[in-house]
Image (cartoon, rainbow over all chains, first blue to last red; front, side, top):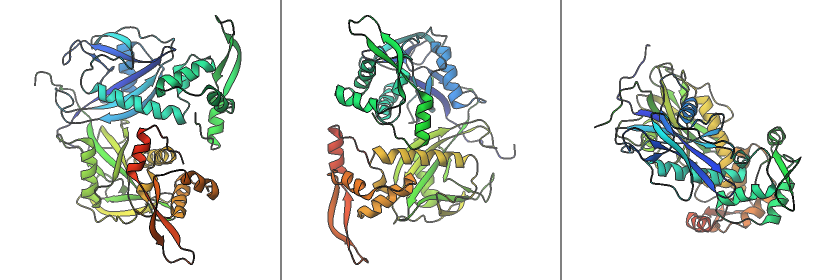
Length: 228
Length: 228
């Protein structure tokens, strides 16, 4: 190549904050480190970006290698690059956040990750590197984002009750919501569609709903602004 | 260091999308490249991250070196790392967006940037690298962000009329807004404060207002959600 650079370069990694919802609380998927540094400590799934690999592809590869998860909702969060954040030298990490439906369980670790497990978002173990900072940033992003983008549905089963949806919002926002007002807002959304199914097990069966992505996108392209 | 990495590494840059507002339309600050590749082409201000330098510090340094701007509103946008986005090899760029008040004019270029100039956001020249993609992403972020965070004030003079504020929102959103409704929402915001001043030059002088950052932060910490 005619123009190349010979400056010293930071190493580049990706890290994934993976959120799940167990019906009552927000969960975070962590791996136990199988290598130094921080051997044995809990950490976000992630690893080094390959030279010919796109950033999101690297995040998806590491997520699958370390937790078995694939095909999940994944979005870039922020890049963390403070000098000193990694004891190995200058390492800059592009962080992603993922949203995972309850029926998706992490499989296992690999050589980098000896174990993968869900933790309640409000009771996390001590994390390696600056991963607790990355996690806090992801939580703030999620809290902001569910207000104005229909991403919460990615944390529910394909069919869900409106009570489940409200419980999800309350868990993420960390406060109770007025049921009547919440239902009223939802009622105006053509893209939250009734299904033929009901949630079983209760003496008062609750109608199951689903999120109609195509209907939402059609509305959005006409200027509709989601807010819940 | 006990644990280091000897993998090949991408080069790491920062790029800045700098927005301004001239009272009628949204503006973008570009530099003309003084070096290969893309010598002579317009591009976003930016450059390589130093090994001991934080990412935002690198963005602020490059912005000042290439345009003379400092002390501006700056926030991380997204990191762009598609293989092939730079003809020199694998270069990953952490993009920032900056909001600049109208009284701040760029000074000059340096050896990397022979010239700096404002362009209307809807009439931009062809840009180097993937900078038009970065710019489109920044525009989308700004359009989303002004709805739920009071960042628009960063594009106005310290004192502004409500007509100027509405013109700013209309320019960014690309559509007209109902004046009565806009004023009604603003009227409920204790943090948009009347000053003693009036905008001169008109037969009907308009009251100048300012954004009270402390009042806004106090409300926000109590759970207030900005929306305009």
